[in-house]
Length: 354
Image (cartoon, rainbow, N blue to C red; front, top):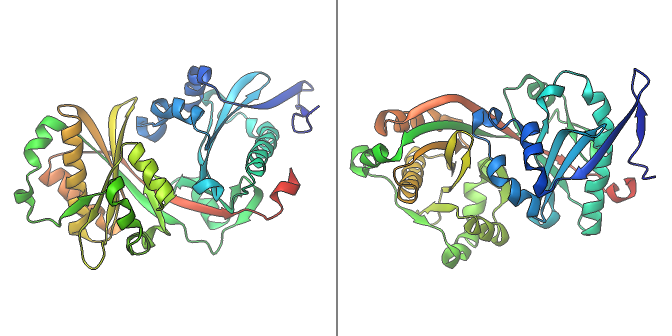
């Protein structure tokens, strides 16, 4: 018997079995029942649109934990930068099991999960140097963890007393793109800095400049794209272009000071277009938002759309709200969120542990 497929006695004397298996295309409905997409991210959940991609993607590890044959939990990891890191994209427990004490039994499933993750990376001969997670800062459990300790998938606990997480602020704004088109007139908001779209033909020019080190300093050297952290390298840039992301950079000299990513997918509440702005300058920030919205308007003409705007500088929030509500007459939706990027070092003896 697989030593990681153990049987555990519950308090009532029955034999409870916890198993872990990979998700398949046939698991869509099962996963959606666990994931609660109508409420996750205020109903703007990416998982329904990206589920099939995650199942097929060799850099994604998608697992289902079953308790006595019933699917109760999902774990989704993304292998970052060729194996340099592992991002815990999401971990969700089926609603019926909330508050039932299942977490005590799910520790067994976690051990199986960690063994599968370790095997995956060992087989690739690329043990990650760190694991990452993007968590909502306002949650009570997260605030407690940020002040004391956080769970790491490759090391039972990592103390975080001296750790300063990198934050990102997220806001939602809704509009009919037909009416928005009337507001997207640059003259009504004054002169805005010029931006340049990034494609494969000018990608190397961006990567070879000082932009990655200067623009991404506030986010720890990572580009947040739809909330997820990425290193700004050739492989990831090709991935963004392949995904259809709209990438903008300013034309400042001697080097650019800002960068943004835009992309879209369908959610239970309709189409979302995420705008991820990396800068600290108010006018540059406005230029990126206007530029991304114009691109969305041209691509999704006449559609109802929700803009999910992410900032790495909280000082820009008021200016962005004024731009979107007063100038563009968008509807500022509840709720605003602040997310923290957590990073945990992986022990060197990972392969020997499993």
